[in-house]
Image (cartoon, rainbow, N blue to C red; front, side, top):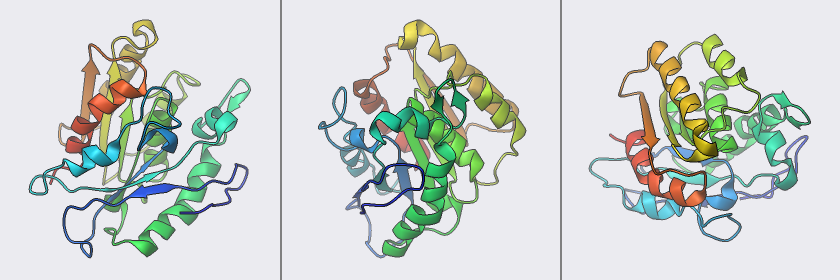
Length: 241
């Protein structure tokens, strides 16, 4: 789909995967993923792609709802700017224009072409690293549109502690499901405690086991190969019936 012009950012096309499970005329949710270069295949990724279409295709139709997947490529050298909700030195501060475009243009366009459940139950955000940070921020910034966030190895260190202050200042959405993970080997072990602190903060704000899943991966490193390995479990949590 596209190319789309995005105010303040570079224009780009997005790629979509429609699962074969179920009836084509039946509503199904959609998962919008940042860093779309990594979502489907190996080309353009740093360490192989996620191959999310294969993981979605393996979801049992009886136990899970297979989502549509929309991969939104990052803006190249502007990646840290558009996925960073706040300024952090010379970086960041352009996540709001990206989310405004998604809410105002991309989500309505996908809804026009496909049968999507109404309201936030029909859409979620996801990503890894900076994309994981943007996913949690976008879900809580626009809970009326995005009813969940799939966050693999999120970069909560970016402009720390802004994401913690933001989460603390937001009301818990009436529709919300969050998957959060991190590897013990990421950034020399420094990322996992921060991710665990976020899980504790969300739990303190009323998230129970049906709404929040935190996974500490003792073998996990900060690359696509490990995100691809953890992705099926994340999808099973997010899209269980």
